[in-house]
Image 1 (tube, rainbow, N blue to C red):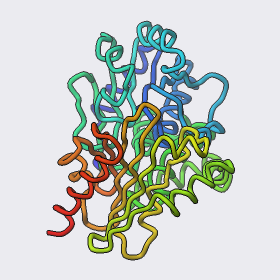
Image 2 (spheres, rainbow, N blue to C red; image 1 turned 90 degrees about the horizontal axis):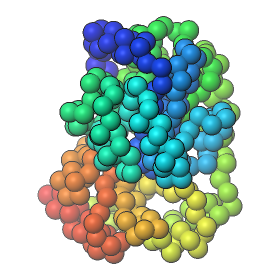
Image 3 (cartoon, rainbow, N blue to C red; image 1 turned 180 degrees about the horizontal axis):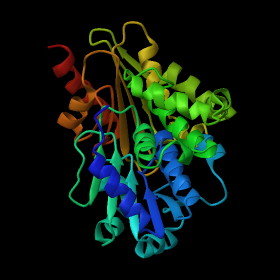
Length: 339
């Protein structure tokens, strides 16, 4: 963990203190960290009497609905006019858990054109900071949820981390570390987690809500992926899943049903690098990369797919179809893994 700048913390408090209507934004295809960090932060602001709304570009996995209260989250793809109006009339924007405005998808231009002050809170590499007035960027953090936690602690102290805020932040930390299996070597993440539990987080309940809420179709899809859509390359110590939109329709896949599937590749003893290549309903191919070795999947994603993320977990979008993406990816891995 990098030491947070006291001047930045003071400026954060000043920007929040004069705000009356805040929009908290996170990225498209929101995951547990996006949901946990944005909702936790927004809930803290609401607790201070500040009008706050979380706006996400598109829908999030149903397994995170247990965190939400009333209408805390607005989905721009379903209510674009309302989302734009809210952003146009707010007086502070806080962006959480993404390093480039492109991750906002349909909200990108709305935010770019907004003249209100903007704050970025993120833990990814190489943030684009030119549109932000204040930036908290620390890629040594386990998650954006942990970064939000430390900002709140330094700015306001323990009392602002209520039980419902703590539940959100714990969810972000837990999911972005694979239940504390990666990106969690720093003592700071455990110090933060200890306080979140102290604040009232029921760890077993949260884990059950996230990981024990599979539909029958989701479990069948997972079995199909392992049995029919897994390719293993022993010479490269590589394995990956490839999932078409037809595969997902066959099992009535919902948003988030493939979340975490990529991690199954690394459960094999001899596999060091894994990937999930999936096609969405529009035919766009997204790739998730994972590593449990010294191989840097962030560098790989940036070099070959203009993607990125973290050293052991990153992502990218391909401009090719599913089959061509798989072929190209295999060729690139051969260049890098068989040196």
